Length: 291
Image (cartoon, one colour):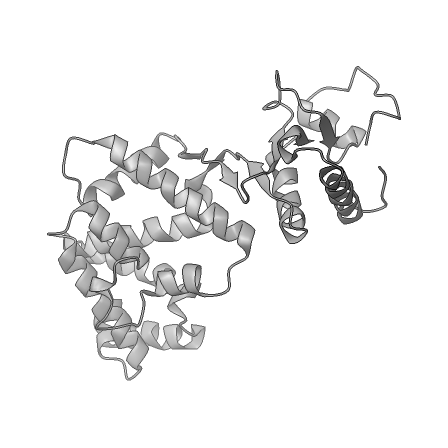
């Protein structure tokens, strides 16, 4: 199954998969193999767009994902503010406010920076004195979260920061900005599914961290910091299934010992597979088998 482009080959594979399913092959008996997860991740949206359900277990460090990084960074700022570590919080404010979900214009942030510098105020103080209503709302929301972080358990605080629990946002926003951006805006299905499984993974790890103790937001921040300092990833191994009857997507390594009626090999090029294995391919594949 050949094509001049990667996209063309993916469409060709999907069309052939649909043909087999239409002729009676159970989706569970079809597997798509690739040398690395990045090839499978590229393939998922084409399968979804074509209405083909996929079952895919990817393994990725959730701490490297943008939305999880932003959530952890927000938690760091809130915990610091709650513990009155004002210098630390002030140094983090420019990056925090640059996150897209605040919907703050870069020129507005520049004005806040200049106002804070000229008046010798912290960023948070300058935000409270701003003439822009949204900037003031953001400042008040952050202060509210810092206050709640002293008394609310971790699960409640995470729900509040994400926006699942509206108790901490109703006075300032219709929905917490993080929630509005990642949950309400029209999501890309692949990204949204991975986003949800990543949240599940990180919350599960934190619960297992000290399941017998009542954890607070500060404990969450400390746990994430320890994982990063020791270079220990938090792996997202939650299976992604987009339909009840789904074809299987997996790396060649993951497929060892498994059997399927029909198997497709993505990006079946010598350079791709040899490079992924770290050594030349010593076994040639007959043309009628490589698809």
